[in-house]
Image (cartoon, rainbow, N blue to C red; front, side, top):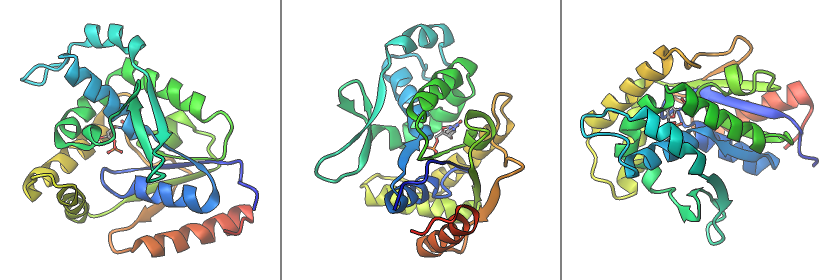
Length: 234
Ligand code: DC
């Protein structure tokens, strides 16, 4: 099967399973997968490590802006697992960027216009050739408004927090359900209410509420769409 040279934009609320879904689509159809949230997370980790975020959560915008020029974020496939990992320079930061500390600061970092420009430029470079599936908050509305297929994902907040809890516990993190739910709701609020590129469904996006769907059912849903719209068989 030829890889369809289309751009698929998957946006939606925190912890709706966007990246798992996008990865499955990428693997099944041969698309390149790009995780835009991972880049925002890498910028956040970078800011934390450089000391640009104070203990009371204040962000030193000027220092961050100046230092961003030296930040090199890439994705590499890990040989043993074949999984894509996020790198800062030569260092894999895949694990660190998923920790709750980064999750707690990522939304305030992602509201900063120069950070959004930095990430958008990177995504455009990565996405030049098409045949990509990207997930995020503003891919279908701002980054790739001409994407041929847009999906907007949502699910009940408690169900999302439970899924996230399971994921973090499996990774050995010591987390409480209440903290996760709080983080999910806070991120939804900030992401949807920010001035620059707020999270919202593009008019031409297809809504997917996966509260009570298995991954398998989601893939069947997707297969039907891509067959009907583009004539592609998996
Ligand atoms: O998808 P995620 O939870 O890893 O994303 C982390 C944060 O990054 C999310 O809370 C908001 C921000 N983000 C964004 O503002 N725009 C995107 N396209 C992707 C993520």
